[in-house]
Amino acid sequence: MTCGPYRTLLFDLDGTLAETDSLHLPTWVEVLLPRGIEVDQAFYKENISGRSNAEIVRDLLPGLSDEEGRSIFEAKEASFRKRAVDLEPLPGLLDFLEQVKNRGIMTGLVTNAPGENVGAVLPALKLQDFFDIIVLSEEVEAVKPDPAPYNEALKKLDLAPEEALAFEDSVSGIASSVAAGIPTVGIASTQEPDKLRKAGVFMVARDFTDPKLRALIGA
Amino acid sequence: MPKALLFDLDGTLSNTDAVHFPNWIEVLRPYGVEVTRELYEEKLSGRVDRRSVEDVLPDLSEEEMDELLEREELRARQRSSEIGPLPGLRGLIEAGRRRGLPLALVTNSNEEDAGEILQPLGLHGAFDPVVYPQDGEDSKPAALPYEQALESLGLSAEEVVAFEDSVTGAQSAVKAGIPTVGITSGHSPEDLLEAGVSIVIGDFIDPALYDFLGWE
Image (tube, rainbow over all chains, first blue to last red):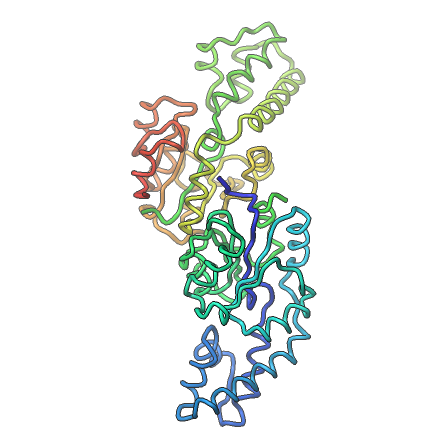
């Protein structure tokens, strides 16, 4: 029986450890403006947020060859990585993770982000080498909302789903962890709490300063 | 199947009787009062306040009464932490979390007292949202506390299930239109059914509860 304190925590990256939309948005502005597409906040939410690069480029710039498409999103990711040095962790994250480590709780990162981006974002958050395991969707060859990335994390740690606790900020991420059977906490950094509850989280926190989260790790 | 579970605190999460009966035996012994089962059930179970103790010990000064009540509270808290949550509660919370259900607390205790009850049970922070009594607003048995919980969950009454051990608590949830489970840790099944609960269980291990929730 668990119900806390949990012995393993699994974290999404974008939007959960740090608010990265504000870097992705100007990056898309930079990449798409030369092609005659003006990206603003509303356009970003509607057409870009939460979708894969391949889908975005196919929809917004139809008629490009695969190779042209790839070169666009490679340019986009390179530009994102340059901006990543300015990233800040979500409020309370580093304190929370320090308590996690002090209690001997295992941690994993489970993300759809490309490996190169993870390599740029974690050092910016001072979290390089922090996680016991990292699962990249590109290695599992299935992206969230598929449960495969979370299933892979459980397999690597040799855990049953109810022994772990997941942290997610997006509907597709929550769909993935919940389908893997893992109790999930919603971080309402980009979405409304109600939307996260409907997606299947049992608890919502604005960020990691919320004292409810400490109770889950027995702090 | 319910979309959220709403819990009362004292008596619903822990076994009130197992705490308070031995507790009153201990606390009243120095005053020469022998607490029998009859005396306990008649005067001291359920919501105990200054007046119910005055009934048993009419000659205490105000200061002595304060001291007695303080001692009673302290020892009750210590007993709660030893006894822990009602059997099956942790399993129910875990099963609810995996189903993504918000677990709310609807209590007549204030924030400080609630924290002191939840902490020794290992349930501090397990509930969100938590509805505490508001100054000047109706508390249980009025429907208001449960209506406030429904509002902050964005759910309607028939979409949730409430757990209550007391008649006044059950009345509050039932008046709000919520299907309610009665926990017989302090009151008789008859009293709870009369208050309108849909089903009575002794603790959270009872498989009838899982049938009632529609869970496998």
